[in-house]
Length: 276
Ligand code: SF4
Image 1 (tube, rainbow, N blue to C red):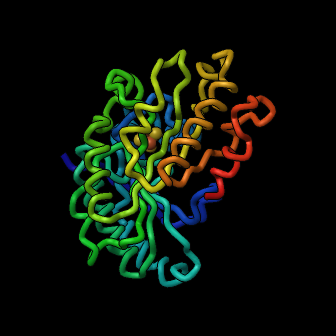
Image 2: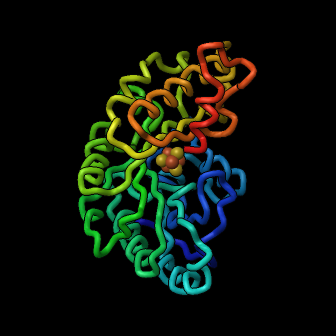
Image 3: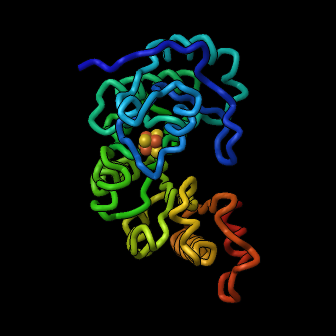
């Protein structure tokens, strides 16, 4: 069944987020249906754009996305450092062909003007992206990965791609010489799931960059009494893993509580990780 569609007046916007310059969202809603809850869904519900979780699960495609790019890129292309895809939807929605097709077309259009994209998905990357004629070699392909437990995925990211498939597809892009990264956010506290972050890190040791951030927007983590010490310890683990494997690390603002760092948790190392 074809997806519902909408038209927009503009597509590219200045993100205002610490690690992204411009951004675009070529769909409204997301079939992955994360239950953390999804911040984008909460915002859209608050504005009355999306009526319910079920509504959010059925994305509407922005049918004039390519026309908008044709209009906006001539004016903006020299200002844009990179375009982030996406903050309020997912560019490679698992088994949603129409979205994935439009994403490929958008990437090709950006590449025609030599504009680089940074992507993140809970879906599966497509092998075609290794075609360096069509897709910018400087693009950075990211996967969101906060656990390796499929039981966790079933509960919190119910319609996203299985973790193994996400990692395998990312590795293929890496093996083709493309830049890859992992977003470990929102990382769950032990009252949500007990897991060893070193196993997760070990499964993605090939990537060029790791972004780590805490689990926001839910009382479950703040009610975990040791949550500040926990995130300090996890951030140090990520920073030292990245240092050992020559991977760039970015610990997101607000993840670390500097005054609570222990003597063995080098503030310098964790802080430095942000500037690598
Ligand atoms: S994949 Fe991202 S946009 Fe989609 S539901 Fe999950 S958190 Fe929201």
